[in-house]
Image (tube, rainbow, N blue to C red; front, side, top):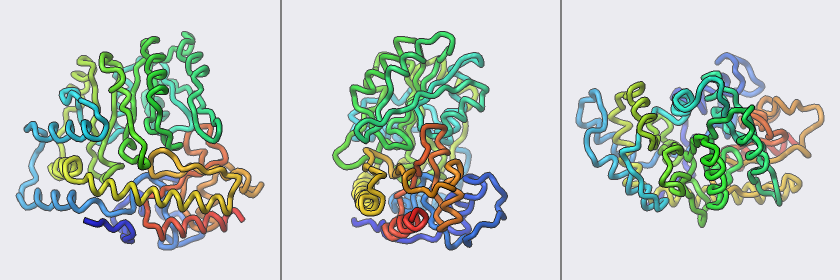
Length: 401
């Protein structure tokens, strides 16, 4: 079956964060705040969900479940669900998971908020790499934990981990770091960490008795020819690595509110279940089973479409912004672009999203939104029909020329 990723879908009045909630989320303002463009005039290339239709196999599974006519209290009581997910991990990452380690969460952000107080005391600290997905820091702030940063370095136009800096911080007893939160693949840079890098991270943390939470939500959104290695796969004998995965990014089902958290440590897992043993949406359950079992071909076609979108951005930046030195990332559908040399001097670098919104009517995220080490960057979402990407790029060009 050929899937249509060029389809323009109207998301207006669906209570979509992307379409209806951008004022509150990006600008922390009222839903009625006035901007220089009308709502229908904005190009939306910001939050990380897709403007592509959710796979028809998932929609069909939801409809089939609706036909059973009762949407009662629901949990997972059969083995089929876990068997399906086990097979997905086996064929996609060659990872033989123990599904008894899995607990469910309405999302990875709630999972981070729940895990931080389970793994750390209030006088203990958390380490993250920056630029960073902001909820990593917010998870520490939420539980009044100190969050420390280790900046990624850029070498030969590629982001790498500053292992000397990480080791200094992890071994400094005055910092009292007890948790490292890893983004693999990395958001916002799109790096897929190599086996050697993951081994070094794991050895460094485990040697110093430091927990690792590995957020692997983007692990299926790889450029063709690139493979993902789950951190926990490399350290099967430790119970101090917690892996977070979800179908939400991969299949555009963020509203499904169903993430999978692998907690091997029995004490931590029992405490999670004591606090958070929740009922599930029967529609989410049906959707997730369909995603893991019937959507491999949809995902392969999506990856090819995204690869072409990235090539479009690469060609565009080479022509119009050569000093951005844009490089197609290993993974995600997010382009991280350095535009500092093209920004007008008077533009506030801490308000890049506002500048682009008012200047040319494009909604994107400025590098200042990624904790630190993102000055002069923008992040744009390429999980859009090609016509939208082309229009968005042209609006960026106008704002910078």
